[in-house]
Length: 113
Image (cartoon, rainbow, N blue to C red; front, side, top):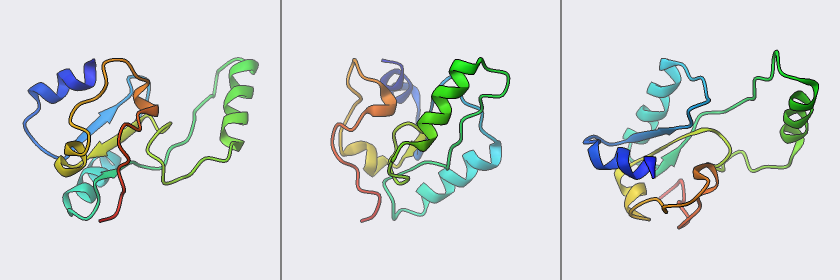
């Protein structure tokens, strides 16, 4: 899996895991990494929103419905990006070989100590 391959060559913590289809600003990357570096959280992600400008009516309808779903805003999944501290990553060791990484919940990662 790509996430494990990245972990094998990365040398620094915290780490940010990004889906290939997201857009993120440098400021947002720095904010998430800075938050993790404070040491009091194991995982973090920025707020997200779906950009469906220029998409078909069907795609826009899908994302409009998805935005209305009751989802925990503290959850890591479905954001397209999340970061982990070394301690957060240690809670599960490695990512499963087959998973939707946005939905990986292997071992619960509490965001507060």
